Image 1 (cartoon, helix red, strand yellow):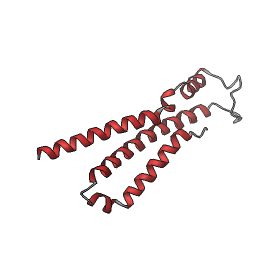
Image 2 (image 1 turned 135 degrees about the vertical axis):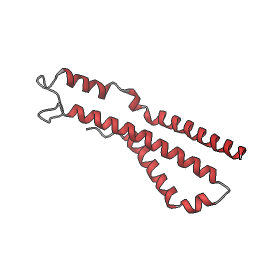
Image 3 (image 1 turned 90 degrees about the horizontal axis):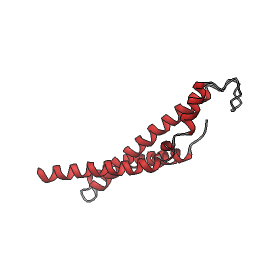
Length: 128
């Protein structure tokens, strides 16, 4: 199983930042001056954490499904281990560029989600 640093690093940074925000939530969310910055940052980090977490789960499960075909455990697939299902599992692991670029697309998608949440809240404030 491969260790995907391009997925582990964003998950770790997001989790640590969310933890720090959670530990300091009383001070951050009670001050009226920058409350929307902290709420927006929390929404962004939480959505980014969830997106990258789901992608990591899919990556790990595809890798584990492929490793199930390695009968002798040497990390290589011999002729008797190569079946149509193994080739399909191998294709899922090596041919998916979306997982490789998910930390970038997750960042963009999280920014869009945060923007819409921010705008809905501002519109709600304007109406009431």
